[in-house]
Amino acid sequence: MKGLKLALIKKKKIIKVKNIEIGRKPIIIAGPCSVENEKQIMESAKIVKKLGADMLRGGAFKPRSSPYSFQGLEEKGLKLLRKAGDKYNLPIVSELMDAKDIKYFDDVDIIQIGARNMQNFSLLKELAKINKPILLKRGLSGKIEEWLSSAEYILQGNPNVILCERGIRTFETLTRNTLDLNAVALLKTITGLPVIVDPTHGTGVKEIITPMSKAALAAGADGLLIEVHNNPKKALSDSDQQLNEAEFKELMDKIKKYK
Ligand code: PEP
Ligand code: MN
Picture 1: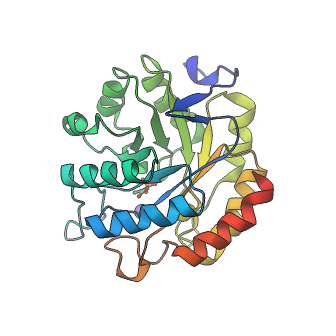
Picture 2: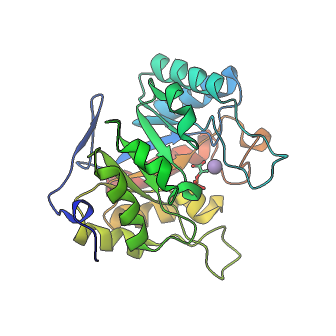
């Protein structure tokens, strides 16, 4: 892989976020697709904390395929996410879409860069100027080498990069994406960066999120990103794929032995 240096360092990288060490034992990041209102994020945070998640996720700046879909609460959403994270003592993860909004992310513990922005090079260059951990999702049709090149942009100045496999677009249509666990096992042989797996977007099918979570951990993933909502049927985004409390409990029970 020509032109890659920092992303290929094999020494295991442990990324500390508050009292959590990413890269040691598998961690669980859970929470709704989007922050919708105070009640929704508080109830969702309560559920994920009770069931053993390590961090809380929630989108405030949402990349939506349609301009008519809910776009997120933006700055207000981040404030609500922080409030929920503080109440339940959970570090928070949220997506940044545009460098101009980075000013709102001071109190966010991990900045997520979504699949659609994996190759937004001007955004990646801005992330090299800060020290905050970055969760870099794989692009919809990003090759592993291209994904690592994107990581390399951030690593120019910021050593805290976590890779997130979230499925790639293939000819298959019965699942939303094809979760590429080859990538996870392969990355473990070529990079020391932590690799986490998002089986929610990787499958888009509620029924197979738990088995693919087990498979991800068996393949060596350093953690999982799971969408959990207090009332998925009413969710303003990704309502079909978010787990409710009972479904998330079942997932957490079933992955115990893989952790
Ligand atoms: C998300 O995590 O809500 C999201 C939009 O993910 P992706 O960028 O992987 O589609
Ligand atoms: Mn989502």
